[in-house]
Length: 459
Ligand code: EPU
Image (cartoon, rainbow, N blue to C red; front, side, top):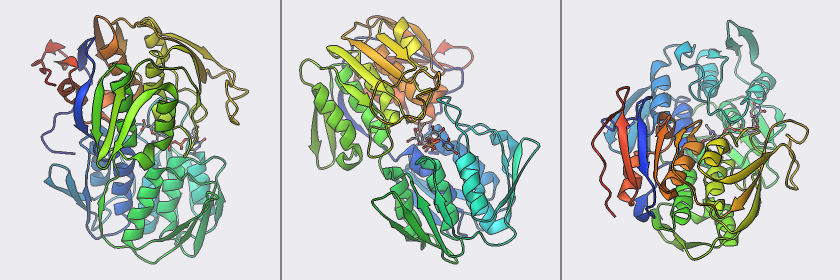
C-alpha cells in the first residue's frame, strides 16, 4: 500500500548466513487481518474513511486492488495513512482474476448486497494452504439473512432483492472471517441479528470498534454472542489499525530462539497474554513496557505442552514460530493444533535443517478437536535442543515463511529460502527489518536470481 515500497517478486530468494542473535528495536505496524477487513467494511458507506497505522504488505495491496476494481478510490496521504472512499460501487461481480488470491473476495458480499442487491464471487477461495479453507459457514449465514445463492460457472451468484433481514445464526465453530463477514452484513440488515458461538479475537473487536464509529450498534457478551441492531445507513470515520500481534509474537520468538534481545515497539500485552504465558512457562524473557514489549533470552529454555485454540487460547498463527523456539528448549515438547488441520506442512523442511520433530494424526492434547478421527497430522512432538544447519528451503505459507527465517538465522551455515513472496503478504520489508536487528540476509532479486545489493547488518 505504501507507494514506492518494494514488494518481493515471486522469484526472489533470501540467502541467510546463520549464527547472529537478533538485537535492537523494531516497530510493529497495523494488523494484516484487520486492515484488509476494514477496507471492505468501509465500502458499506459512500463517505470517506481514513485509516492510520496501515502496514505496507502484499495482502493490503491486493485487497486495495480488489476494492478499487469495485469502485473504491484511495489516497495515501503519508507513509502509513490511507484515505478510502467508495462513492459508487461500479460492478457487482468480483473479477475472476482475484479468485484464490486471498480470503477477501467472499467478504465483499455485505457491501455488494446492501448497495447493489446482487454479488458474483469467484467460488475458488484463497489464503494459505493450511487446510481446506471452506466458506460454507459464510454462505449459510447469508442464506439465513435472506440471500439466494446459486453456484454457476465456478462462482457464487448471490441475490438479495430485499434488504437482508436480521436473524439468529449459530456458528458451528467460532470462525474469524465468518464472524467478520456476518457482522458486516448485519450492521445494515433490517432488525436484530444474533451471532452465537462467534469469534471474539482482538481483530474481530477492532472491526466492531470501527463499525461502531461508522454508526453501527453492536453488543457483545461473554458467552460469544454478538447482538447487532441493524441501522439504515453508516457514515465515514477515522480508525487506527491495531498493532499486528502475530508479527509481534513472531519477532519475540525470533529474539529468544536466536539468543538475542529485541524491543518490539507497539506490541500490546492485552492482545498477547496467552503467548506471554507460554513464554514464561518455557523460561523465555519478556518485559512489558508502556509502549511495547522487550523479548530476550535468559538462560536455558524448558519444554512445554501446548494446544492452539480460538481466542483467548494460544493462536494458531503463533504456532509455527513457537515450534522453532521449542527446537531450542531442553526436553520433549508437544503441540496440538486444533484450529487448522494441516498447519504442520512446514515441519518437513525443518527436519532437513536438523530439527527433531515428529508428526502424529492423533490428538496429543485435551481440547475437543474436529480432526480427531481424520488422517491429518495435527500434533507434533519436538525434542530439543537441536543444532540446526543451513539448507535450501521453499516457503509453503506466510507463517511458515517467517519460521524458516528464524531457523536459518539460528542455524550454522548458509540457507537459501525461496517462495519469499509469501512473506511479503504479511510482513513489511522483513529482510530489511531483520538485517537492522543483526541478521545477515541478502536478497537475490527476480527471475535472474542475481544478487541484489546486500543489505548490511546494523545493530
Ligand atoms: N471453517 C469452516 N467453514 C467456514 C469457515 C471456516 O469449516 O466457512 C473452519 C476452517 O476450515 C478452520 C476453522 O473454521 O478449520 C477456523 O477458520 P477461520 O474461519 O477462523 O479462519 P479464517 O477466518 O479463514 C483467519 C485469519 C487466519 C487465522 C485464523 C484463525 C484472516 C484473513 N485470516 O482465517 O490468518 O489463522 O483466522 O485465527 O483473517 C494468517 O494471517 O497467516 C492467517 C492464516
